[in-house]
Image (cartoon, rainbow, N blue to C red; front, side, top):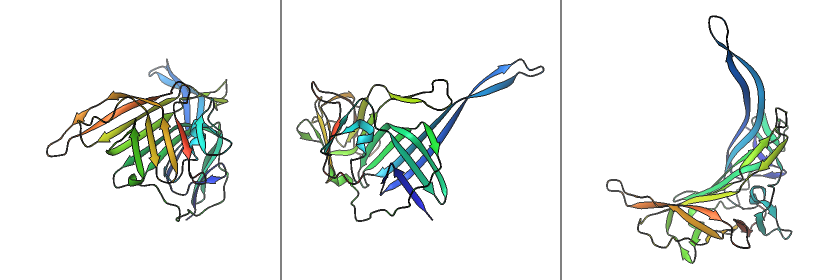
Length: 267
């Protein structure tokens, strides 16, 4: 059984899911068709896309989501255009992929009793069925667990039970009279997330900066977060809890989000 998942020339050691989709869109409408009105149609768009999930063991991949990696290779920052890549996925001789792809969304989630999960979606300009070299995962590389991640809001370390962070580039495929995208343009950058805490009276979360320290692989920083929702709840004999929803914003002189990489080799 041969399986692989490659992004450009890089492999994901712990990819757990890859869904490739070539979405076809048709123009169609009903016309007067005699006894019954019936549809006519025409192909208007083909949008190659992919959704993938992996266990987090590095932050280097963020250069594709945010767009810029400093020459020193230690800091990822936001640039005007997310980087372009080719994605190949294969299982048992069935190959599918997308070309000239850009990352639309990237998210990470941390929950008790499990590994740190990351998920991304990408939109490409074309499809591919080319093969790539099969690889074996490096099982000597540690996957980050919930106990490896600390979330600091301002100067307060939050005792969370679940944490989620989302980056959305708002990609818009532009077809220019073609059935496949000719340009993929990012619109406004959106940063949001949720912090679930076990005490719904938690007062440590305020409107300030947020830092996520992830074991030995690096840190993610958001200069300003604004709390948008605090829904406390309790059910039956369960412990009370609350989820703090937030949006991320840039500071006066810095990007809305950036990451420092301690481990630049793995994804």
